[in-house]
Image 1: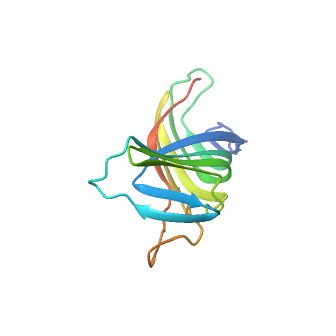
Image 2: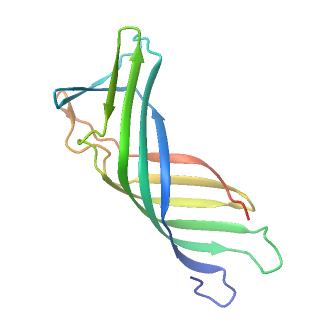
Image 3: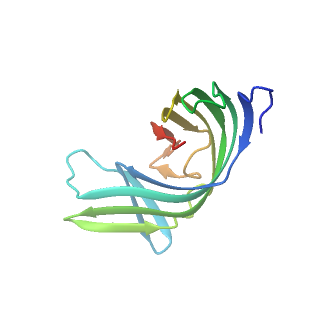
Length: 160
């Protein structure tokens, strides 16, 4: 929704689906509905320790760009707020000593939200996201609260 005559400023809303995969040093184990969490020591050998999520995303953003009707090459700066709803999650630990697979962990916050910034020229853009609320809901490792927030950094490629 452009907000000026040159159409260089706009507000935008969207709907998306995202898959995210994280390598981690957190071991999640579920036994009879009880979830335990521990940090994997650096001397422990394992083949895989991956955490994946599937989300529905609802972004709202403010856009500034230098586009014209004659050119698709322009600078852009998009910033906004994104709400994500967790549809599915899986923590998978595979080692020679044993495996642990935890699906649909109820101790994760199903509703995640954060702020983001995308900036660049033409098709290549830098992207940064910071999750405002913690990933886990009141989870402890020993006496310490597991206070993990998401940070995404990367490149976005726009097809124009």
